[in-house]
Length: 269
Image 1: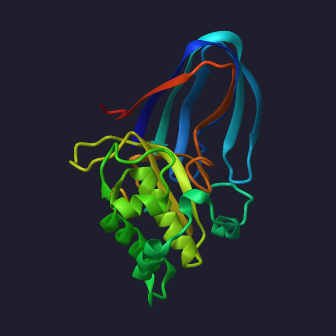
Image 2: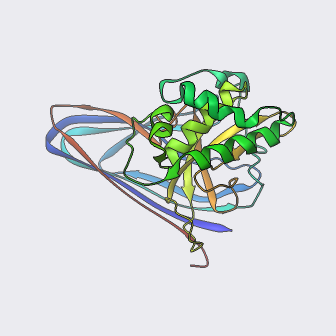
């Protein structure tokens, strides 16, 4: 499948700021199952800085905008050819050992309810089957409902209220997998909006769990599936903040407002 991405992030400030510095994790890697045909990132009035590939295999690009500035637009456009690999990440170059992803972070820290939820994998010896059981348990425990959580909501909080979005499903799955001794990480990306009636967002997130013998395997608990040809993988991290596509700092007292629009279409459309 060929997927076309048009992703626009617009920052506006109630008064001009002196400048902005950002790091972008906005360029997907090519690997077995995902081939980047075209990709371009543009920043209005932006000065491109250094670029590097981190230990997880993600390309990080730095940008700066010199002020005074009241509005900044980051636009991503590209075409990616995808293939269904049943969620298995194969041929992706990275250096970080899986055991690094056993570490806790604040959004993925377990409480009593998450410990109980992790018992869905109790007695299951096959690691892949255990991962599927955990993903199914998270999907049952947290109903998909936009607008009820925020970017700062933790896995424990989302489970406590029983509702959330893809970020919350990913955090909860990471939390229970790590509690079971299974390395797990957060993945940001895109999801092609089909007409299957399943709720999802074009800008999407899911979890990957390390399965011995297979490597990293993706699980999208929000949509009760493993990533397939509808998905474009951007990057990964310990949690949502660590894997954020855009991170940055602003110099000046202006209050920032954010507007994001994302369209993911198939080439046939």
